[in-house]
Length: 186
Image 1 (cartoon, helix red, strand yellow):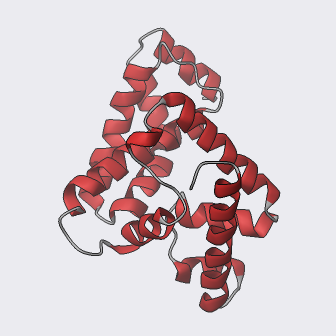
Image 2 (cartoon, rainbow, N blue to C red):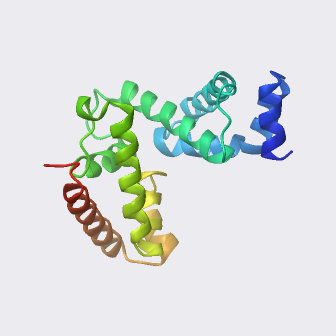
Image 3 (spheres, rainbow, N blue to C red):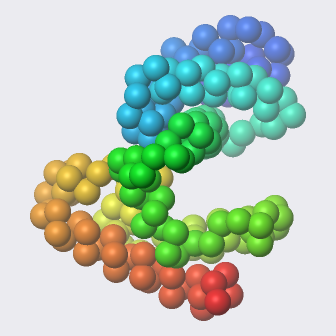
């Protein structure tokens, strides 16, 4: 079933919208959650929580790109669970490492809580990514959105791990400079 028909099922409040979503996007949602949490049971719970959130979001929302909408919800739920479960522990694997690496570039907190500021920051990051080479952008997104390890990125792009680390470091530095020039960082 195509995305438009699945969204119509949600709008009609038909329960098979969830089963159709699971059939088409279950593995996608699970993989996002698992990559963040590294735990099968937690990933399955986050996948199921995603379907509940989607049920509650549609209507009133009508997503333009259903897969991205699902991915965004799954990622938010998974990161919330990660923070709850692993906040007290040091480390926490690739998710914690990825988030820590980006802390240098992006200030998240009370100063960015207002929706307008969040949207402006999101647009600035999107503009920044569009200005990168295709490879740089892909490596950055796979690391910081999909939480791929440096080893996985090296394998995917046939680079050495040190090249991936240096590429990520330089891209973070460029992002920090760009955000400073746009007035997001002082």
